[in-house]
Image (cartoon, helix red, strand yellow):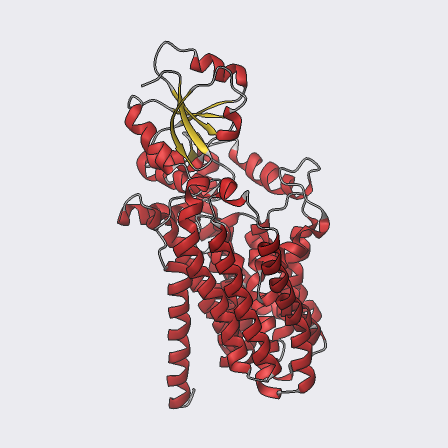
Amino acid sequence: MLPEKSRINETWLVLILITVCLVVFFFRLGARPLWDIDEGMHAVTSVEMVRNGDWITPTFNGQPFFDKPVLFNWLVAACFLVFGFTEFAARLPAAVLGSACVLVTYLLGRKMAGTRTGFLGALILATAVEFIILARTVMHDISLTFFVTLALYLFFKGYQDRPHTKRTLLLFYAALALAVLSKGPVGLALPTMVIGLYLWVQKDLRFIRQMQIGWGLIIFVLIAAPWYILISLKNPAYAGYFFITQNLGSFLSAEARHPEPFYYYIPVFFGGFFPWSCFFPLALVYAVRRRFHTAGDGPVLLIIWFGVVFIFFSLASSKLSTYILPLFPAAALLVALLVNELFESRAPALHKAMGYCLFPVVVLFLTAVAYLWLRPPLQLEYDSGVKLNHIHLLAGWLTGCALAAFFFLVHKKNTAFFTSLVTMVVSALLIFIMLIVGEINPYRSTRELAREYDRLAPAGGKIVFYRRIKDSALFYTRRQARVLETEKQLRAFLASDKRVFCILNRNRLAKKRPAPYVVKRYGNNLLISNKKF
């Protein structure tokens, strides 16, 4: 057990982590409307689940939605039952899962290399840009990331605590099952590959015999299988579409929906894991060289974890920036091991190396500030609603924080250096939420147009779009959507003797002759009608 003083210190560290999570994940969580694309779609799927009373077959726009498993939608739907159909309820599961993932990362880091490493790793994860975004958004990826992280933590704990392995590993199989219910077969494949490769590298494949595979399979099947069986019985086409087309096809097909080159995730990771990504190459080098002697086998697991997820999704034909989120906890702990080494060794060479890592970021920010003043993006407000003075403020603040962090690092003020980077992210997020989000909302959401449509159009009818559904509109109207795919269809629709309405992007209106009547404009979207009021 920890000495009394250590237990008190650890309590304060956990309270700090919870406070940071409350700020970065929960602050004004329901203040902005749902954004297009995807966030509105996943929220609407859960709304239809509640309204239809069908918790087996997810639907979107009244049609079966087979692209994702059901666990995240269940969580969102449960929040709707408790809090009503609000933006806060839609995003609450993501914020809770993001916070839980931060705390599990703390536990894993503490198990590997001590309390301080766990604390640093958890803070790094909580302040990584893409992790913050997905913990504040109605997206399934945060659910997969949490359960993969929980499963690998339980495995490592069971592997290290051999006398108490059984109960921990049984919980590990439950976490695996929930990962599969979160995102499908990848929830099983990723942890299995990480663990298998880790045991092979450790030359300890015999541990597989101690992993309670028999009981584990029973637990896994009892949790993961019932929903897949029930939806397949209700929808015979589900299994073929989800497992073959959606999963295997997305990995192997040359006609993937989101094709990207093999190196796609390199810039995605460095952008999404910012600001800590600038230290990641150095952290990886240190871990590979086994410089963290007190960390035992931990760095090995983290390197394999990061590498498996990164390579797996890089090999897939279909790529999206959110797919690699499950490697973020591993990356956070690798950087935490580096920062902890900085705190413990105070070696001049390490300070210098980290300074070389941070210096390009400072130069980049200074260059960006200069560019914004010399070549201001005058089209920015028209395209996205963001005012230039707010961009200048945010860029200047980020640059000031980066300069402060660099100054503290050079002068070996390690605590101030780390705190400056955390403060940079948290404060920039608050500036973004309070000043910029309100300007972007009209360009990313159709809430106001949808409500106006609902007020003017006869009840019960479909909401009509040209070329593409705006997902958020369905959330705010409870209507189903109809999409006019071609200009011929739009002309025929507007030629109706009755007053009709349609939502479309303003750039598409300029091509229409004769021009329809604009009822309302919201950002870059328009509500049009064939008849003047």
